[in-house]
Image 1 (cartoon, rainbow, N blue to C red):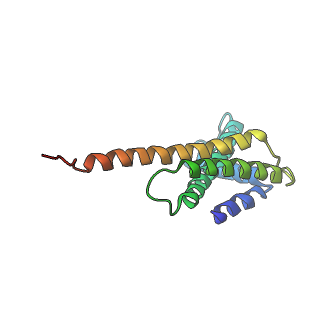
Image 2: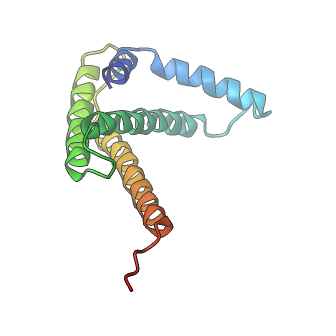
Image 3: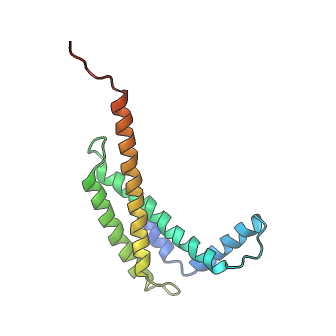
Length: 146
C-alpha cells in the first residue's frame, strides 16, 4: 500500500508528465500506422485521465486488502468505506502537492476522477464477492432431514 502511494507521489512530482504522455502516444500511433492524428490533444487528455483513474483503482485494491486483512473471507463494508475515504483524502493531498510542482497544477476534477477510480475498484471487489458467495452456496449440498 505504502509503495503504491509512494509511486503516485513520485509520479506527481514529474513536471514533464505531459511530455512523457506525448512520447508514448506518438510511439503507439506510429506502431499502428497513425502518424498524424487529427485531434492529438483529445488523446493526450484521455491518456492523462486514464492514468489518474488507473493508479487510484489499483490504490483502492491494495488499501482495501490492507484494511480487510485478517477479518475473514467476506466483503467488509467498513473496510470499503475506509478505503474510499482514504482514496479521496490521498487524491486531494496529491492534487494539493501538484499545485506546488512547476509545470503541474492541482485540479478538483482529478480528485473526483481518482475517487471514482477507487469506487469502481471497490464495486468490482463487491461484485466478485457476491459471485463467489453465490457459487459457494450453490455448490454446498443442502442438509435434508428425514
